[in-house]
Image 1: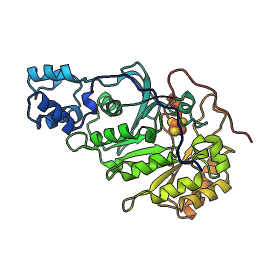
Image 2 (image 1 turned 45 degrees about the vertical axis):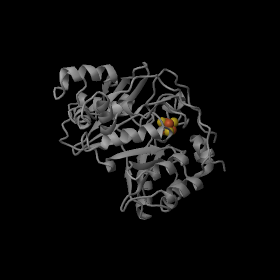
Image 3 (image 1 turned 30 degrees about the vertical axis):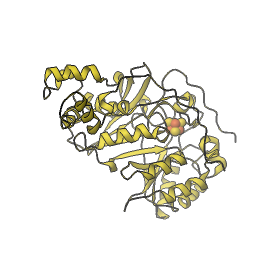
Length: 367
Ligand code: SF4
């Protein structure tokens, strides 16, 4: 079993001046010290960016006009621009963002009674090539910077005038494999959780990986980190390898070893996401293997009936089969939920985020 995977390298991305949205309070403080200002002004600037969610220099009235002009000469204040928004019948809104190099990514704002959930992208495209996923067919273009990740959150919260009357959950389930862009992801995580800014609790942030074991191991080293979800989607190596190429490098056994050594806090569980494809991943035998796998480490299972999209070659499961699989897992003592994907009618659901016009028809696995 190989323990590295030479994934196609993302493009370097545009060479930009530092973007204020990707700097921590300490980094902003250093910037201000270099401008002859006290370091504490870094917190003031950070709070304006993340707590007030100001997006233009003239809004920073806590700073003098002269200082604003000197800051503007040093750093950008560039947020991803929303170029298209489509709201689904269930209230979810898919947004297409244009980045500074004209690349496009997508995010989804999902309001619920007791919370709002933002589905975020971590890369332009994705190198993992999962066959059921529209984004996977694009290939990897480039990583998002920390500022671009933070920018999706602030831009969506501002667009929907969210006042934090309900808590915000962040899920990295949009475009990209977040653990393939771990450095920028964790820089964004620190900014998003900082008490001087949005102060989103780490337990409300989840990264979903396709099973990049070297990334899981690296994530486990961070003392403060997001919750982990694994996109499992297959219960045998033969099966999983057909739909998720990462399984040819780290098979189910290697993955279970990695999840078993992942340091969890008391009561924390790893979420196993399992997309139900009719006749492919939804047999009762799959359910039994899924239950056995889930028992190997503290976990809960999230069943995701497939969202059909053009050219996928897959179908959603029958309702009766979903119920049967739920029962089977509950009887095996595994916490289980069924994700009724939101935003389905605007192609904003997991695995349907695709841009750049490079969609290739995925191959249906051989029988
Ligand atoms: S499912 Fe996730 S990891 Fe797999 S190709 Fe799609 S975006 Fe990438």
